[in-house]
Image (cartoon, rainbow over all chains, first blue to last red; front, side):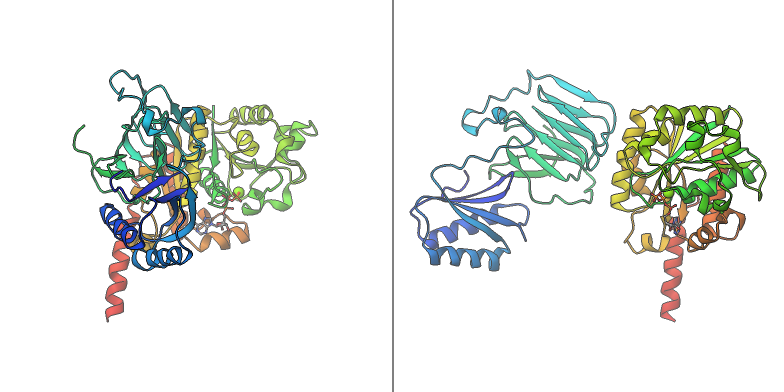
Length: 224
Length: 264
Ligand SMILES: Nc1ncnc2c1ncn2[C@@H]1O[C@H](COP(=O)(O)OP(=O)(O)OP(=O)(O)O)[C@@H](O)[C@H]1O
Ligand SMILES: [Mg+2]
């Protein structure tokens, strides 16, 4: 976790702000400000859940945080939850629960030993391609309403407009690369991107991966 | 042997029936023998758009039920040589017909006509499998909006799965003005997503509504923009090389013109 006091994470059910226990409200406030300024894309308008490691905050502190987040970052707090330890993300519908491996027991990067499958056509709305054994390379587009899932990486030699889930068995180092990355939804391992990546092509290939900040980041793809 | 072409879409109301009526008529005007088949069982309206409603005696259901011969169920359009209509039953629903029965009808019609155009109902269910059962080719109609395109993409996937080829695209209700001011997708955006061959672009045209109400396909009056577009599409279907005019350019031109007139 990049920030030891608070961490922003994207889960299947949305963004979570995780706050460590026994902190003063000023410390929390400062850490939130740091954490949010670290993001490379604005979170404007998002709704978040605040996960508090026990004990809970005072009633007035919660109210303060709620209005502070709204006024300063335009973030709406869905709810405050008191959690005993690191919250386990809710099961992902896309992959069976048994496939979800928490970061602690993440398998070593096995990109080299993995098989890959080539899909020599465009995947259209309503169609899906699953390849849990390894990586998927698509010689075409993945249109909106289509879905691709792979155990390893997903490389789209065209436009990715639909949904893509890389690292479906838990491999956190999995990446998603597209010539034109304009997806509906991206998921890597159990991290879900909730921040709109934008629907206009930026005219260069991009790569999505899990960054140091524990959220999916998207940047220009230059080389592996 | 004639060609059986299914005219289909994912989303409803995008102009399949309008396109079938106008392309059928246009092909007949070009000297081809054409039968247009309404496959929208239960929601038939190709007969209305063609102005042949009052002359329907038998439908494809009667042919399937052996109440009459196929040739007797074909209604001849008296305005142009070589054009007939096979109506759909309004009393029945889509499950009353099997894909194999539709295929048998299309195969028969193919032997006596140059073109068999099948007007499909919208959607991906039974209606589509019936309409496409006998087809060798498909025309997918879409309007240039996100939801129609998403559904067109879905139906293209299904047509490819059914191994129907070629699949051609008609973009209907295209408005150069709306593209010009950025509120409608342009031709390139649509083609980029759907990635099939473009057969033609039909502009938004109020004449379509009046022609529908009067039961006279637009192509009889060459004056309207949509009529021109349908005539050109029909020519392309017969194999003539007719370039697709850049409607967008015209849009830009019109918007510049508008800008000047507003200024003065
Ligand atoms: N180019 C056009 N310009 C203006 N209006 C149009 C155009 N094309 C179609 N329309 C109008 O859109 C409506 C729907 O057209 P049509 O019935 O041909 O669609 P459809 O795809 O057959 O619909 P359904 O899915 O219900 O069978 C009609 O009212 C028609 O007049
Ligand atoms: Mg119709």
